[in-house]
Image 1: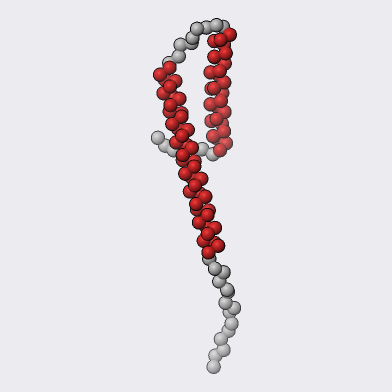
Image 2: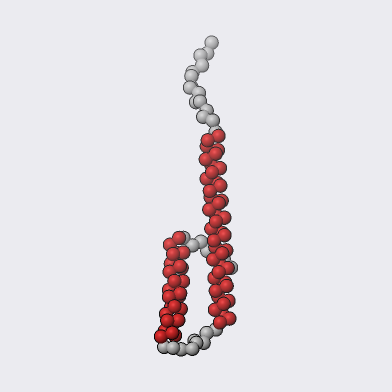
Length: 100
């Protein structure tokens, strides 16, 4: 699979889509109770498979995110340390040499 960069706005849209799906499943549950249906036939194996994949994707995305945050933090900290450790070099005043 190809990794595609997702800006935070895209992640928000994805979260909203998942919430929409969650809301739809909750609506089905409510309607089932209201209409006193015993059960609704679903492809349970597929549902479990997709949920497992989504959970795995979510964990993988979280791990990648934390690794990138740590990498950027380390790089930023290294730059700060290098800046602090570099002594200020006095600039030499340019003077003209006298020829004898």
